[in-house]
Amino acid sequence: MNTANALDLREKATAILRENDRGHYTVPTKGLYPFQWNWDSCLTALGLAQIDEARGWLEVETLFAHQWPDGMVPHIVFHVDDDGYFPGPDIWQTNRPTPTSGITQPAVAGFAVRRLYERAQDKSLAEQKAKALLPLIDRWHRWFFTNRDPHNEGLVAILHPWESGRDNAIDWDDALERVPTEGIQPYSRRDLLHADATHRPTQAQYDRYLWLLEHFRRLSWDNSKLHEASPFKVVDPGFNAVLLRSCQDLAVLAEALDEKEIARRNRDFAKRGLLAMEGLWSDEYGQYLCRDRVTGDLVESLSVAGILAAFASIPPSRAEELVHRIEQLSTRSHFLVASHDPADPRFDGKRYWRGPAWLIINYLIADGLTHANQIDMAARLQKTSLDLIEKSGFAEYYDPLSGEPLGGGSFTWTAAMVLQFLREEHPA
Ligand code: GLC
Image (cartoon, rainbow, N blue to C red; front, top):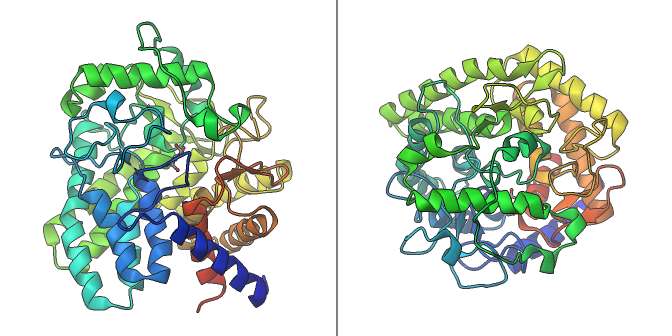
């Protein structure tokens, strides 16, 4: 990309971050998502820090200020009242000083905070902020392995599709069949006021999302009980890769800050988890798959989660095989990386996580491949991502066949990822 175009994209991305900035947190987009979301905020902090380092740190601090006493960091913090979103605090009823949801999201904070720290110009601010965040992120990691890996398998389960960050992925379809819908309170969705129904999860899926929520609410959100009680328990390779990478990054950061115990513990989590990840590998499909922890079976669903696994330090031969998978996908859809393989009849290029490409996923995969020395594919992902933005603007997600922008517009983490990609391509 030439310098003039890069400058133009940088200006537009910066304007979106400013527009969605609420002072101490950022909304993913106006209307559709009017609160603070967990992994959105951590990734957004990287873009914010390119504009104002202190503001980048504040984004993560605000999220962790709402960590639960048991160590969980919730997926949404409801800083303000806004009835444009469903389900709101009245449905979650988590009984927190500032209302939050009762489930979590991909644990990308360890990665984000190490990156903020290492790229900081203001070293003394960075040291002070990282020191304070370190034990909080460590607590969250411990929470995961205590509550979501009670039988010490090395990997954690998600108990609700929303926890994965890939809300309506095809990966969950079979497991959701086991979730009943009887008895849920009548409700009216608000997402359809802001977005096209054919691009969003179906009603049948929404009913099951709500059933799980009400089930956990009846158990008073007691995390020591939820894993056992949930009919939905899936081990997602992408989700685990994000957590394991964050454990590794937190360990490196802890060493730099002389917190030996935190470093040791997080290295152990990462080591055990990476060994267990091998159990999710499928020779047949050449990528990782989810495992349904209720049936014990691998889920035959070729989603991007199995490629996002490259974000963790998987063996070099696996990273190479994942590069082949991306090459294969590129013959089926021009815009990388489709969230589901277009060769599967269940693929839907416009419906949220059942096919569309997402910029954050490209960024995380590209970063993992860079670490695995798969430089060519990492560079290709960077280029195709920026081309897509030039063509289609800063959307929530994109049809991987046509590049059509879909979902919410002026989207925060898309803008943050653009700033990050531009930083690699045109270092200031
Ligand atoms: C959707 C996405 C999720 C994201 C949230 C806010 O629910 O699936 O990953 O965190 O929107 O952008």
